[in-house]
Length: 137
Image 1 (cartoon, rainbow, N blue to C red):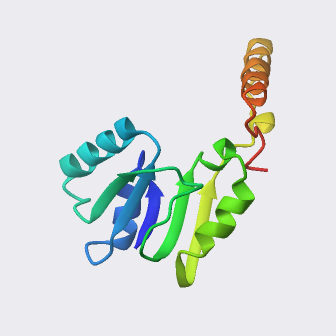
Image 2 (image 1 turned 30 degrees about the vertical axis):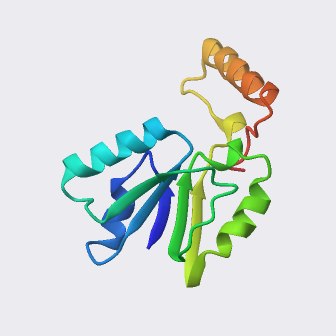
Image 3 (image 1 turned 90 degrees about the horizontal axis):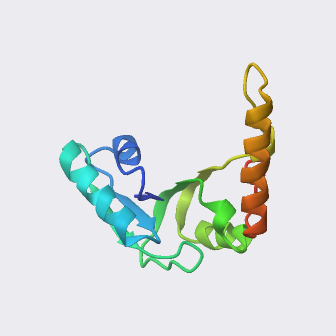
């Protein structure tokens, strides 16, 4: 079983196949609802289920072969503590993988002054909100 972000319901299901299971966790009930509808309409994700919860306090009563996420860690108050806790839900030999952004490294080609300015605003806004802009790095 793999735990995954509820916003991308099908690709983890394709990885585990019909003999595996995927649990999607998202703090937003709306995102969970959307993920459930996408999984149902795809016809390929019947082995995927979803729940609403906070990843940093989520306590499943099962273990997983993989814990994966995308653009999640930067929004957690203590991502290291969360990752350490999630490792406790992995089966022996399981993997943990998160894809995060390194916003300061974003660029346009060709280089554009307007892009630099907008990137600066976005980074400043995210930093002022207390989130990590270089979690990927």
